[in-house]
Amino acid sequence: QVQLVQSGAEVKKPGASMKVSCEASGYTFKSYYLHWVRQAPGQGLEWMGMINPIGGGTTYARKFQGRLTVTTNTPTTTVYLELSSLRSGDTAVYYCTRSIYDNSGHFDYWGQGTLVAVSS
Amino acid sequence: QSVLTQPPSASGTPGQRVSISCSGSTSNIGSNTVNWFQQLPGTAPKVLIFTNNQRPSGVPDRFSGSKSGTSASLAISGLQSEDEAIYYCAAWDDSLNGLVFGGGTNLTVL
Image 1: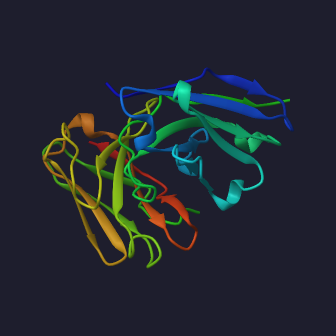
Image 2: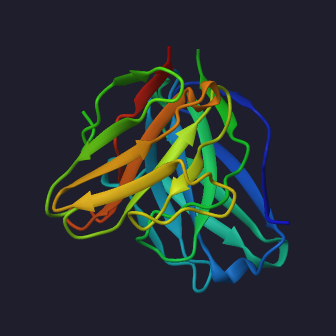
Image 3: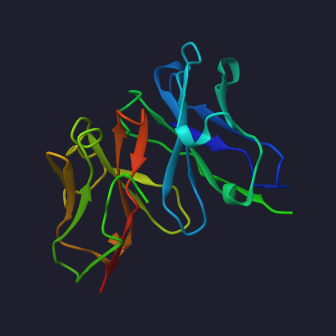
């Protein structure tokens, strides 16, 4: 069965960087785009960016350009989210999810979420 | 301020039919397909409707989606207590070159 399993919760200092992983299994890794979506406490969903596992091409939301890097490791079928220059507003649950088309928004499977708290 | 506009709350009694709206523009809903997600407290979102009106297997046919122009709607008939959740619409935005979500609608079953 399809699974997206994310790394555990983290606490970071302002100005630091974070790196969250998401290991995919149960399907052909290169057949789906992988996305990151975050949710601040008590807030709605926010799309951050995506990667095409074939070739590694990325698209990022304008808000995160310059701070966000999404990469994949095909042999381990893992996608990574790296966000730099963290501030308190980056405290959120970060989800990985997948879609078969890049711009469909049809996210059929989601990771369990990773809580990242940014605090001094 | 979300790019897609949803009412912050909705409510209904068991058995009733409720509808949740999602308003956008020509660059998102007007040009691309709409998806709806259900999020229960403390859990990851789950897709309810994709490509405007398609239901994944396992989603009851009480849930239906529609789209007209730059707006979309999610309808839930035969409301049940377990439908209490937050519902989000989402669509790709060609101008922003990214996916946009609505702000979410908190559905209460009275």
